[in-house]
Image (spheres, one colour):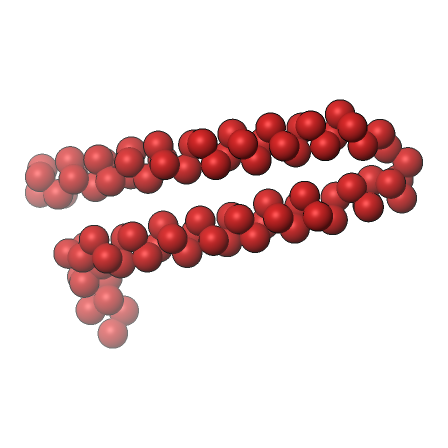
Length: 86
């Protein structure tokens, strides 16, 4: 069964697109929880919030801007591997 699914995955762009969508959703949830629960935790520790809040905002913006490039790069590598017969 697993081999059948894996062989279908190598031949279907829909499975790859679904995998990227799923990982994007999981990443969004992770960053959402990080941004929601880090400030109250840091308040309990007595840490300053403003510099850390700016760091969280910039890290989220950087991650969201890189997701598309990573997907494109991975698809290019997959095409090159398929064309070389690997």
